Amino acid sequence: MKVYKHIKTGNFYLKLDEAKNCTNANDGQEMVFYCEYGKENPKKFVRDKTEFLQKFEEVTL
Image 1 (cartoon, rainbow, N blue to C red):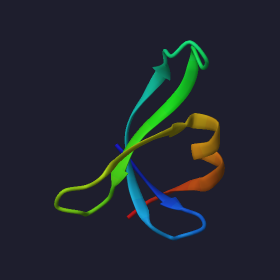
Image 2 (cartoon, rainbow, N blue to C red):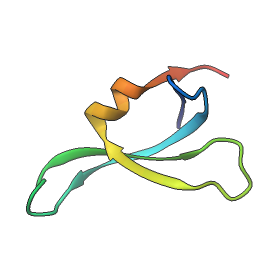
Image 3 (cartoon, rainbow, N blue to C red):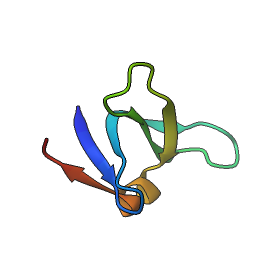
């Protein structure tokens, strides 16, 4: 799994996986499933892959 940094906030996140949105309005949309990095009970998030790649950058820790 890869670690990403939010460009605006500087917070770190762990990219867990990718998926496809299967709702009628957005059928086939590529999504990224990710969570807070380094937290005991991390919050989990889903975001459009294109938006994710615009707002996050991969980092090596």
